[in-house]
Length: 429
Ligand code: SF4
Ligand code: SF4
Image (tube, rainbow, N blue to C red; front, side):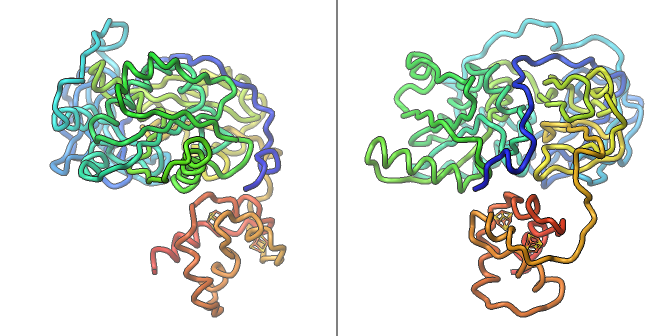
């Protein structure tokens, strides 16, 4: 592990509130909100749609896609997305009355509804799990239904320390996240639930609140030292949980059957308790070019350009816009790229804020394997892959231990794409 302040400038102020972003006049909604699926449009050009109406679905039980605004479908076309892919998308022009915005919603009780009904509802309401690669939550839950004795882990901090969206969401929606996690835990019948929190501003809820939602399921709250990186992957969280159980309860260890982030627990709460589809996302807008960093509740499909205009403009000419954090994020050049369910931050950088990105030959400094938490030798695997330099099998086999933390990339002075190469090697093995 490495200290975050050796990796990033950490002079960000803590954000304490979430602002509702303006409703976009045009929303462009990707038909691929999940890593695996491109859904089929269920509307045509010229159709009138309601806020929250299903506009994309498939027969594979992937999470449905909804119109984030009321309006008219003006186009179905291929658009660039924040993950760098070009995918079919639906353009909707704002028009008409809102079904959810400004309306009071009643709370529904889920306690007596059968698991199958809750899973169906999560799918129809479009909930995806953004803990790691975005995936349909109900499918992940179905796949673990029969596993005995597993844990549910809920991560309440950001895996990338340059981002604050999960931390802020956890602070603002404590009770909603608790109840969302409780309904997930109850549906898949886990033996224990672990909340891992990193913020000094997050307070463990009172016992009575926890008992009200989780009944007899044991619930643990584990503070995480987020000034070290990497933290927050399944491997790191498993280790923390098992150490915690050993230290505090001298208990046998167990394994995580499902890991979600706070946003996913919140989306589950909105879907099942409030009957609101996944049409909004909390996004952190930050970077040295931004006049005022902020946390925004944004409609899915809002162009990045609109959100940046709300941050009171730029202090200097932006040189780079990075989605989802500085460590593993992706740079986008098109400001019309829309917000999707898997976007949690936009960082706008000036040229002084990032190093020269040109790749140069390896200088054999050894930094990449010094920092690697899995004791991999990334530079050896890189050379083997690109020049067929032979390396022992035991070194090559370590590629499968990679936790995809991207620390090797972050420290490499030659800017070599080490972690991406290790992913390619994993794919070949
Ligand atoms: S090789 Fe994998 S685990 Fe090691 S630093 Fe790189 S990304 Fe992280
Ligand atoms: S950090 Fe980069 S330059 Fe240094 S040994 Fe690894 S690959 Fe080579």
